[in-house]
Length: 195
Image (cartoon, rainbow, N blue to C red; front, side, top):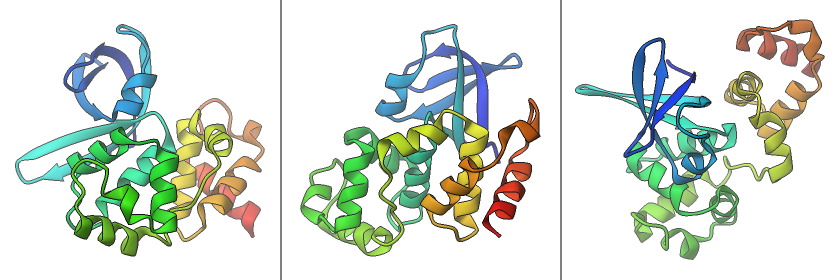
């Protein structure tokens, strides 16, 4: 699995192209992520998700762990593929999508492109209890450090709530890791904090 990607931004249309070690990788991004990217030729760092099909490998990129987490939740719902998930993330602010899912606001969801009533209802049924309402400033504290954001996602996948995972990661003494921490080390340290 490719979790992060760092390289030089070499192109923007239709997908962004990131040059890494002489290779140009095509990465599909939402409008939100595209708006946050630096200029061509500048270094870019993305959290990624590799979608594997029999005939194709497709890479999706995100500047924020929160956006990738919601993308992965959407993919877990029957009838939602990566293209539709990216369209949904491009069509409304993350906070509004999360709020609509959290509150069961089907009327809001059906206004998003590509969603009919049945799919919107399925999203609410399957995700209503899984979407955590993050305050924007809290999400931003973790999002700027991809490795620590990855650790939050890993802890959440182990059963912690998003808030508990974030709090555990933020309470770690980061100076203990040195210049190149590994996600596994961060997760282990966070679990020690929780126990």
